[in-house]
Image (cartoon, rainbow, N blue to C red; front, side):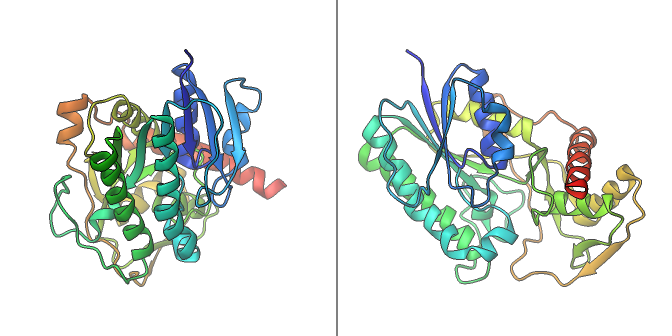
Length: 317
């Protein structure tokens, strides 16, 4: 029997790549998206794919899906600071109500449920690198709290369904990911830096740029997510690239690779901005046989090319 997957947020950056991967695996995929932060452009290439369908719907409202479902993957949520600071209530709703509705669908269909969580559950970490057993250091009433706490609640609700309803659940804690299909003005470091560099505009670096991040190419991340979905693991799993670098180093690397005339422009550090962020991926390595393979330079090259093409399209449209 053909396996059916429902992916909330399927028109988003990561969700659309996940649609592609599961269609290649032979699944029938239904994406649910209200296009608040997703884009039809991300799934335009699937328009004539007979095993793909799009349902325009806000998952913070009840999800009615006819017929069998084997996997429910909850990837709907604003995920960049620009989005969740501008959309605080929808962000909280999709983390709470959206997760509840997606879990309800999985329970009613006896389907496997997978939650896209985030490294933001660790907040501004006091433990480095971050392992899955670290509880985090989160300011619940700060500007980032709407996203951090939405995902922390989503994890708690997911585990409640596992323990109380015996639902087969997966939780993926996604660290900084980049690649094609990110928006030009996404607000996150790599798209912001590339967009500015290609236009020879000042590159905004918060603080003194010494805060660190690690960046995983989307192709690597998707392979990790698929491994988690098909595994027997029910507890959270970190997925990300353990190679750490400063934000200033990243900006300088992008200026060099784009041959831009841009200069770094230092700006005030946002409230609660994490000083360090790097995943401990020992669990993914030992229990899933997964680790990222794409070098930063190779991933950035592909991402820059995508942004270059899209920037040219925006300027001529």
